[in-house]
Structure formats: structure tokens, C-alpha cells
Image 1 (tube, rainbow, N blue to C red):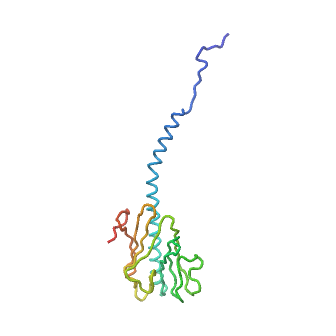
Image 2: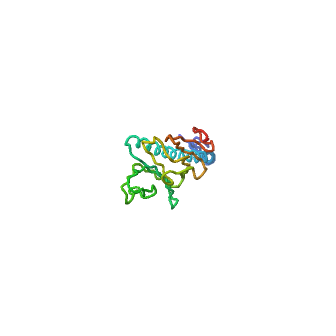
Image 3: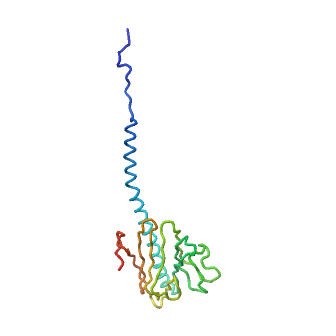
Length: 197
């Protein structure tokens, strides 16, 4: 008995993908990635700017609340880093000579004084930077004094601008003379934040 089934015996059923199918799939994947990457970059920068603004607002709110709770004078410092490697903010006590600088090493931002650091935020200027400004500084540039007796701040027109370094998204944290903190968008392009007046 012969087992020969003819020419059909040589054909086998193959499963899997052909090279053309794989290349088409990779092309579609590359197209999706090319469309998604710019959107992700925008999203990441916006989130970084929002996170930095929330931390700055938190520092100002903390200084006001702690001043009221402890009946002591506290200073929120926003010293520009001479090396331009970081943006920083700190809440320190007002005891002794105020030689504190928020850009000093984290363990010793108040060297040679009796002032103490209560809260510190140091942000490398890789993606986001911030800087403080005021129309009239009271008690020294780049600092805001919080005292319980006045229930407010002496520095006039104080605000901190937070800016993303890639796309330029920006938020502003304002502090009014009553010590209230408000976050707004200077250009009005940050969803969820009112345009600054």
C-alpha cells in the first residue's frame, strides 16, 4: 500500500505573521508614538509647573499658619541662587542675624545664627524655575515677614512666577497684604487657573 498523497503532501500550513505584516504594525506604532510624544511633553511640563506652584503656595500658607499658631515672627525666603542651578524657598525663624539663604545646603541653610529652618523647598532648574518679586520689599529683599500682631504681611505686591523651561507654561502665586495666597495664570493658558488680573 502506497502512502503517496500527491503534490499536496509537500504543502504545510504555517501560522504567524509575515514580514510585511510586522512592518505595517511597526509603522502604525511609530505613527502613534510620534503623535503622542509632543502631547506627553506638554502634559509633563504643565504638571511640573503646577506641582511647583502648589509647593510655593504651601510654603506661604504654612508660614502664615505657623506664625498664628506659635505667635512668633517667621520669614519666607525666596533667595536667587547665585549659581542659577536651583530655585528655592524656605520658612525660617527670625531669631538672631538673618543670614539664612534657601540655596545653602539643606542641612545648614542658617549657618552661624540661631535662626532655624522650618520648611525648605529646593528645585533644580532642569525643567521648571521660579523667582519672587514685589513692588515694595519690607524687611529685606527676597523675603516676606509674617507676624501675628499685624495678621498680614508688609511686603507689597509680592508674587512668585513659576515657569516651565521647555514650553514656557507659567503660573503665578500671589500673596496679598492680608496673607492670603492665590494662584493664577499670567497668560490664561493653564486649564483650571484663572487669568491673573
